[in-house]
Amino acid sequence: ACTNNSDAEIQPARKGQITIGFSQIGESSRWRAANTRSIQDAARIQNVRLIFSVAGLSQQKQISDIQSFILQKVDVIAFSPVVEAGWDDVLRAAKAAKIPVILTDRAIRTEDPSLFTSSLGSDFISEGISAAVWTKNEFRKAPGPVNVVELSGTPGSAPAIQRRAGFLEGIDGDTKFKIISSRTANFSRADGKRVMAELLRSHDDIDVVFAQNDDMGLGAVTAIEEAGKRPGKDIKIATIDAIHDGLVALSNGKINFIAECNPLVGPQLMELIQDVFLGIPVPKRVDTRETVFFRENVDQYINDRKY
Ligand code: AHR
Image (cartoon, rainbow, N blue to C red):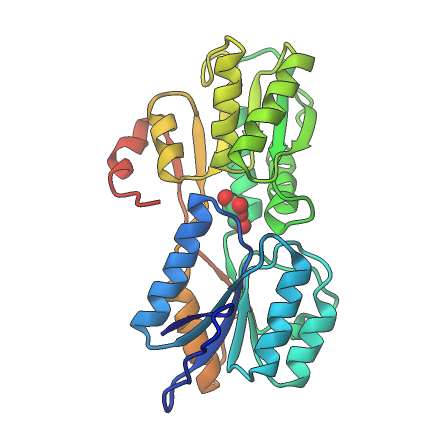
């Protein structure tokens, strides 16, 4: 029941079948691929007709995909917004067409919460807090200062903004911890490596990397090794996501802590969509279930992690 929006032929809906238009951000990471697969599999299982488009990290493309869903008169629009701000106009058009909108994974910033029906995703603030709490505990006996560098995600995106806010909240004004640099590496492994290599050239006193996802943390691992230091020992690393490669690095002691960000939102999204379609009231906010991983508890999870 999945249709790619760029395909010339679009399957007609069977009688009684719900049609949803979904606009995906378009990263090529394993996290994002797992997110996409989860949504497509859940649609197939629930017999939901899915018109799926991928935006190549472009907000403009997401807006035009949503406009096209409105023209196609889908029953529900869902999307994972690449950045937080700038959605009001297109969401007003969806509202005028009486098409409910569900945000997944990432949230938006708007003065008018009536522009979306529900928002399903991770608690990015909690993830940032968890990374900070781990950092504070890890360095509880160190006299300080503890120098932290932050590798942050796509500028303007909800996870980049909220994970930073959560990290600062978790540090809770403890002046022993100094964020000596915060640089974007766009949630990408290659950028994580490049930016970390630059940071290592300009700072010889880094104690901790707070990488806002595993990919950037894994890029930092390589840069630290290439600079002749030991990731996880000379420089500690806390990350977010818990993809398979991240869990392996955690098990090997090259990453020290991972807060989970769960991409498998498909089943919860389909439940929300069915309820919205039937007119059953749904919560404005639905959090995905998540946990945290340390070296001590990671091995039991590695083999089951498929992404
Ligand atoms: O929005 C979720 C975040 O986006 C994930 O942490 C990350 O890997 C992706 O880029």
